[in-house]
Amino acid sequence: MSQNNNVKPLDGMRVIEMGQLIAGPFTGSVLAYYGAEVIKIEPPTGDPVRYWRLTENNTSYWWHSVSRNKKSVTLNLKTDKGRQIAKDLILKSDVLIENFKPGTLEKWGIGPEDLKKENPGLITARISGYGQTGPKSHLPGYASVCEGFGGFRYVNGFPDRPPVRPNLSIGDTLAGLHAAMGVMLAYIQRQKDPQNKGQVVDTAIYESVFNMMEAVVPEYSGCGAIREPSGSTITGIVPTNTYLTADDKHVIIGGNGDSIFKRLMVAIGRPEMAEDKRFADNMGRVEHEKEIDVAIEKWTREQTSDDVLSIMDEVSVPAGPIYSVEDMMNDEHYIARGMFQEVEANGRTLHIPAMTPVLTETPGGTEWSGPELSEHTHEVLSELLGKNKEEIKKLGDEGVL
Image (cartoon, rainbow, N blue to C red):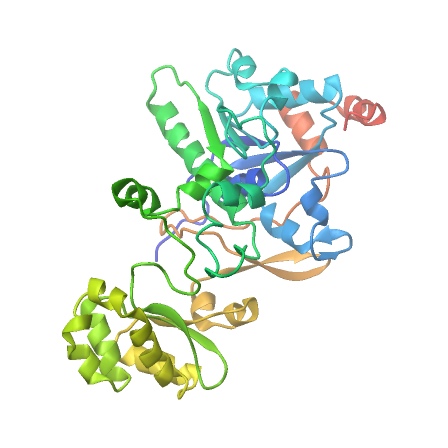
C-alpha cells in the first residue's frame, strides 16, 4: 500500500465547529481526521461531552477520540464580544458546523444569510433534529426521539416487546456522517463554481436515519406492506439469523444466496434440504423460515462457536461471531487493518478507534488527542485575528473567553 503520510485529502480546509455533544462534533471529527483544520469553539465550561460517561481526571475517555486533531478555543457566545470573535473566525474559514436549535445563529446575527454577505464562499453545515424547514423544525430533537420519528425504532426489536434502542447514539453519528458528506459535496461544487459560492448543508437527524430505511417506503407505496420488527432476523431474507452454539455463544450465519444455501445445508448434514425444491430460491425459503432455522440451530447447538465458524469458512458461507470491544481489540484482523490508534492521555497510552474509509494514497490519521480546554485560544486569536497577549488577557478578564 503506497501512501504519502504528509498529505491528507482535506488539507487547506478551515472549519469552525460550534456544535456540542455528538452530531456536530462527529462531523468535525471526520473532517479533521482527513486533514481539515478544525477550530472547535467551546463555552468557557467546555463541551459537555468532555465530561460524559467514563472519565479520568475529569475528562471523558470518549473526548480523546471525538475531538482528535481539533483546536480548542473558548468563547462565551452569550456576550456581544464573544459572538463577534466567532463571526470574525467564521469569516476567515471555509466551513461552519453548528447543531444548535434552528434560529439560534440568526438570533445572534451570524446566520448563513448574514455571513455570506462577507464570506460568500462559506459552507454552513446545520444539524438539527428535524431540519431547518417544515412544521417540526422548531422542535428540540435528540437522536433518541429522531430515531423513532425516522422509523428506525419501529423495525427494531421483537414483535411482542417494546421497540429497542442500540446502546449507542446511532442517529447522531449518522447525522454527523451525512453532514460531513454534505460538506465535501458542497466543497467540490464550490471549486466548480465561477463565483466560488458556498451553500447550506441542511442535515436532519431523523432524515439521516430515514435514509437507512431500505425498501420500507416503496414496499408500503407499492402494496401497503409495513415492515415490522423481526427480532434477530431480517424480513424477507432467509436464512440470516443468530444461532446459539454448544459453548453458549452466538454466531451469525447468512446463507441466503441460492448456491450458498445449498453449501450450508450440506455442511450441517442436511443434504436433502439442499435439494428440496421448496428451498430453491429466497421466496420459497421465506415461506419455510422456521423449519430452516430450526435445522441450522439444531446443528450449531452441537458445535462450539469456533467450530461453526471454521466449518462455515471451509464451505464459503458468510458467518461471524458477535464481538464485544474486548474481542475486537484482540482480533488479528482489526489489528492488521490498523483499526486502533494510540494517543497520549493522562500521561499514558490510550487506544482510540481509527476512522474509515481507508484511502491508499492520502489516508487520514490521528495527529493528537482531544485538546485541553482552551488549549489553542491564544494561538488562534493571535494568528487569525492578530490579537496580542494584552488584548487576549483583557478578553479573558471580561468573561469573553
